Every structure is written in structure tokens, then in C-alpha cells.
Length: 95
Image (cartoon, rainbow, N blue to C red; front, side, top):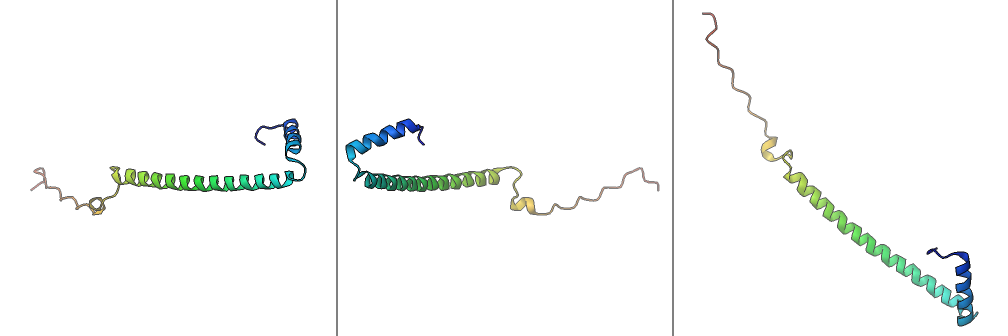
């Protein structure tokens, strides 16, 4: 948890117990836990909003690239091609 080992955590708890007192320590821990939970919730909300915006931008760029590509189907490209004109008979035809 945050790179804190067991020894460091015990020292922090002892110092908090000395300065805050045994009666107020549970209330402080509960308030700290609620604060961390609210912070996480806010960060998840910001991340979700950021991810949503990025996804919209990527979709716009993708649509733009696909519509500008030479292989993209346009109304003119969807029309069937005219059949080829019949070949002219050659002079080599026997009379």
C-alpha cells in the first residue's frame, strides 16, 4: 500500500496514537477513509469524462480518414459502369 512497509505503518500508527489520542483515532481513521473514497470516486469520474472525450475525438478522426480515402464509396462510385461498346469487326473477315 503506497510502498509503505509494515514497520513504517506501525510507527505511523504509534505516533498518531500518541498525538491524537485513543478516543479520537477511530473517528479520524473513519474520516480519512471517507475522504480517500470520495477522492477515488472523483478521480474515476474525471477519468471517465476524459476517456469519453478521447473516444469521441478518435471516432471523428477515423470517420474523417475513411471519408477522405480514395477507396471510399461515393455516390458516383456506386453507379454501375456502362457496358463496353461492342468491338468493331476487323478487315480480316472473309467475304
